[in-house]
Length: 309
Ligand code: ASP
Image (cartoon, rainbow, N blue to C red; front, top):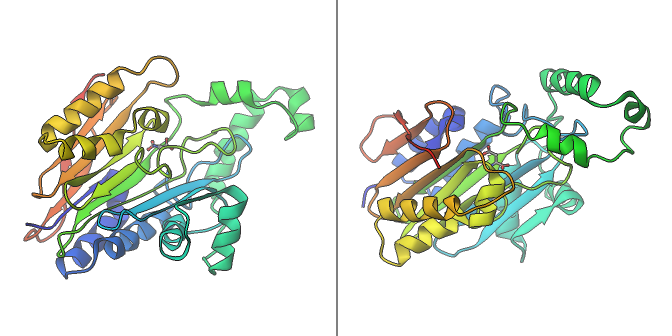
């Protein structure tokens, strides 16, 4: 079976590194972690790692996860503040703890305990944009008492499709025929503090099973959580559907959602035979993703399928 790597366009800074490592026979988790680290450190990617958008309080909270499709060990961190590489902290959860997911203060504590690299992830441009939003949208009376004010109404207003959100997702089939997934994001800009997206929720933002395939989502994490989209795609393959049909079923599940946030969401999937499919649902513009297959000299960009929900 041929090795394969699929990442979304946010993966640009790291896709070459991951492909190179997979071509050289590296294990999928190592190759994915190395690629995502480059994305997290690159401040031109405004929705992942350093340079990501802050929450309502102007603090950058990062989510990341990895899953090993052979052992089904996963590691995830949610709402992690002050560290450069949430993906590596997630990997350490997978390798060093009897747990699968750490959030907030506990995630921070663990990152410090393992000596993870610290960083001020709020870059000056993000701080400027957040401050402009704050001055324009927070009533003067609340600005005086800030941050001890109710945030729920502000959160409703802030969840705006014009605001930035995205994730980087990496799916691989490596030389050992093992299937792995990794994801990292700053989530919604101006999200309610402590809000986790789909990325750290295994089965929602990503899932992998070396017997069948892997899937990962970007876009409205609330939808992927409600429909369990990544796990659903892999399970539909286990139940005998082709990759194509499994993704169609997961799309149908998303169509059944009523109320809440229903916006854009993109599904990425690979299978054990080295096939792949990327579908952008409710996309406002053409999206591309990166594809590398064994024998390719370098990854190349492909247009995603676009379907309206
Ligand atoms: N899925 C991510 C989240 O909901 C954001 C995104 O990929 O656009 O946090």
